[in-house]
Image 1: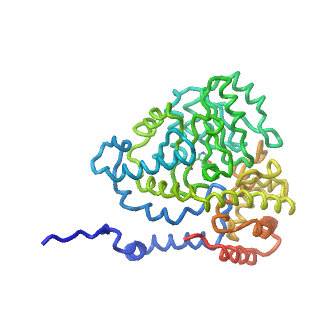
Image 2: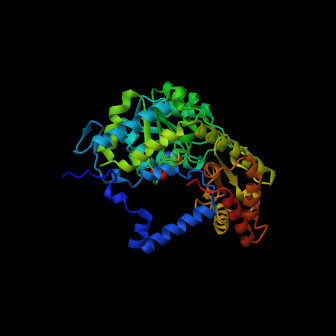
Length: 425
Ligand SMILES: *Cc1c(COP(=O)(O)O)cnc(C)c1O
């Protein structure tokens, strides 16, 4: 007699957490500590978030065990029917959400994602115009310490003292240096970007225009911020684990004309087998983002950032550019409270608030002890906080930096707030 095979895969029959604890109690304990740290603290790092809980069913699933070098329909391995289905789903959803002609969902993270664009569309030594790290740009935008900074000729632009871009200056630099690629995008810039103005500069010198929206990809997909494709950009890159709330990874969106070059730069240019469980999780995140609930969340992230920036300013904080249009802000803690960013970060850590030190434009302090502290609202908004909570949060932030109350008391107050707003599970 033939037995029906059970539908469940053998590996998923055991409750995975119980199996982990039995097999490796030491590692399981460390995991439990990290869960507790996240549960009892508040993440204010603008590039961090709490991923959609549903994606964890895909992360580490049997897709992780599958080699899938190549693209759907053109793999180098057999057994690819279902990885093809899931990658096609992720690509279609990404294109629809961002209004892109082509998507590559395989970059293992944000850095290889940007490298793939450079290697796909340029030759080593070509000139790229991008934002300076100390003004809010990213390492992969040609910081001298990055490999990309050595392989390509990066010319960097900054912001004016008030924080705006001097487009006349950027245009003049572009005319002089003739870049092949103009990049806009940031890791620490609290204002929205005039994409049309950058597109115009690129057009004037015959360059491609790329927006690295790693921080705000979710907010753009959620229609809370402008989409660079609406201004005719050629390439948009984004990480998938920040505001997008998906798995750690990178996503390259581009015009059809660049599809082949970029796909080949990702594989075989820079990577081997894609992490298919991440691709599968990304497919799920992209569905969850295409909902009214997420679009409301994206708007709330911005509302909360404005409220937090206002409440911090009212309590004596000086913010770089004087405020925020997006999800993040940089407090000049040195100018406001006479404490450097590293010390403020350490005081935060001891009470369960989590942020990171940050250089401010033309900082006169060293990068390990900069003047700023970077804060963002994505993670606390994911936990359900609204503008009503931002004044209390600002009070806790300033009290922590200025040591207005004992740390044990501050820690208890942070925990109480965290308990009221649990991480979605
Ligand atoms: C976070 C970020 C990246 C890189 O992402 P990783 O996943 O850390 O490699 C690239 N560009 C920008 C603008 C970012 O903010």
